[in-house]
Length: 232
Image (cartoon, rainbow, N blue to C red; front, side, top):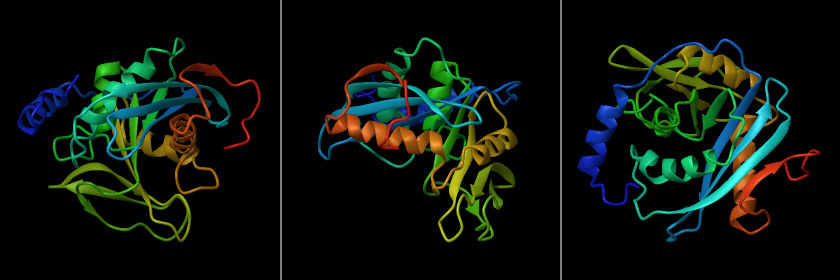
């Protein structure tokens, strides 16, 4: 999908896509998804997964898995070009779409306001939240070492996201609106997704499932969950 793009092409495309971002609150949330990618080093095969959970109960209801071939390189600021095509392939397997999707990466917390969550959200016409494990962009003040403490992340006076402490004595995660949601609601939703781990449950479960897919424990396709899976 993007293998023929140069980084100059990709930059121009991000700037154009960013013009389509909309911020609007979700009225009701009953289901939430987590999306993640896994891959083997030096391989062109992307293993993509999307898990769907109840909200706010965080009970795993279903998941979808697919592979996608790409040679677009990983480079900070261009994650969407590597991962979004694979995630869109998985998205097509899901008939009953979730109310919101949390992606392992950034939304507008990005130099061109086009992290993987915004990129996916626009192309999928879906409400999305970015939840990154490290800070890509912006001025950050470390939140207090207290669960659910947070600080704003700014760039030139604009609030782009939040550093959120999900667990004491652990590094924060970085929350930002992707598309069709507000910054404040993104933060509130992620707080409700925090369990016993640093990473909120939607992307944590997606990470575990997609890694099992990569090593052959799970098969591609859409899967309903009849009972809690022990590996999570």
